Length: 326
Image 1 (tube, rainbow, N blue to C red):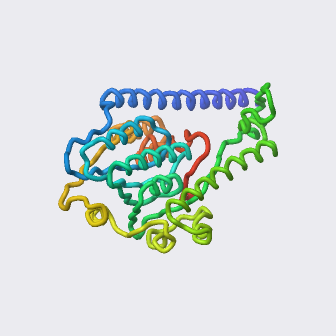
Image 2: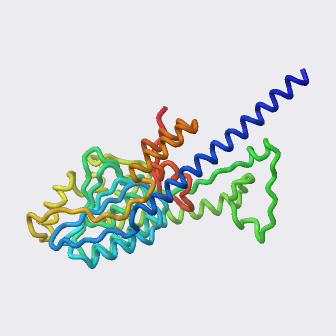
Image 3: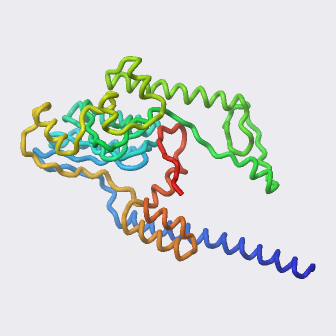
């Protein structure tokens, strides 16, 4: 019996070691691919040299602070573009990143006629981005809204207790670095976070009220965190018109005096390396070969950045994420 127990223990130890090295191999492989991608793709942001054309800007995925994106939009302010169409397909992101993008688009709007087209989703921080424009166009089945703020953090205190690990700390005051995820959240820390969330929520609501010209009654109908279809959003004053890019061009021509017949050309904000197709495919194949099939499938479907960014978002979030389907 003792020999059998030793064999079982050895097997478990070997299995843990194999899992560790498989994980390390996957991380090293992805890091190597990422380094190659950074070398292979130039760091320069988009330029717009086409005089008299309309610039198309695409805002996709999670939104976070991005100084390079801000500089790229500043260059567009001083370009020869006749107008700007901003396409949004985003569930939001950090409140700070969404506010930064909102401010950048507001400055751009002061220099160029600007209109927003919601392609599929402009929720939470994505909607903060959208209301920088004076005119929002959405498809009938697009989703907009999710006006609200949250603060999420993992708490592994029960796990640490199970495996016998205790994190010691010495700090100046009880609320310093709270919550830390290594111990149960105190009532005081929870109250402090609640105050942060409520303050940011009030800012978000005031911004919507001001930008969309709503009274208190209209505002209360849309600020409970729900998303609405484009068809619903029209009556709720969350969007101005149903349509697509052609609708946006017509609006620019009729309402902003943009010359008719101008072409619409991409103004590319530099793609993040994890969204590159070849990197997505290579990372998925690598993980599949190492035995991480489920992670590989997620990366193949959503891209490296989307697969890990949700975990890496720091601070206050303005984010909408539907429950995962089985």
